[in-house]
Image 1 (cartoon, rainbow, N blue to C red):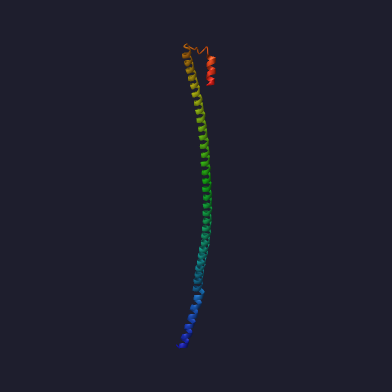
Image 2: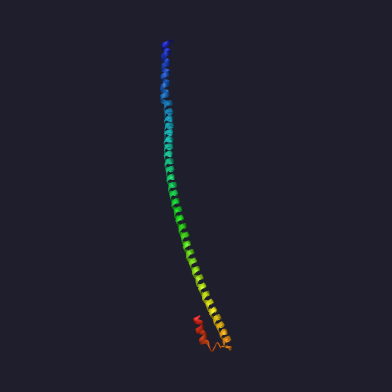
Length: 156
């Protein structure tokens, strides 16, 4: 055979191989490559979507933390105000109770002073009667002279 005939025959076999490859081998390979590219694109889109959702979730968590911190601050402020009110109320009650105790003590002291004066008057009256007995050298009857003794008590 001749170089030309071999060359032509090899060209024909090559063309048949190219046609066979293009017809039966190439379509499944391109289909597999396209499917793989689609899966990769879907995975990247899902990753982007998850990244956006994570950013939104982080933003929502930050907002909730800020809101919780604000509420906590408000609750602490309210608690401090309430504690101050309770302390003020306790001080008022203590002052009122102290005033009542002082008033009761003053009233009791006044009563004791009055009782002491009464006892002292009776003792002075008894001493006056004893003194009058000794001056007169006779017994003064308290029941007979009750009016005189009552007047003496009131004068003292």
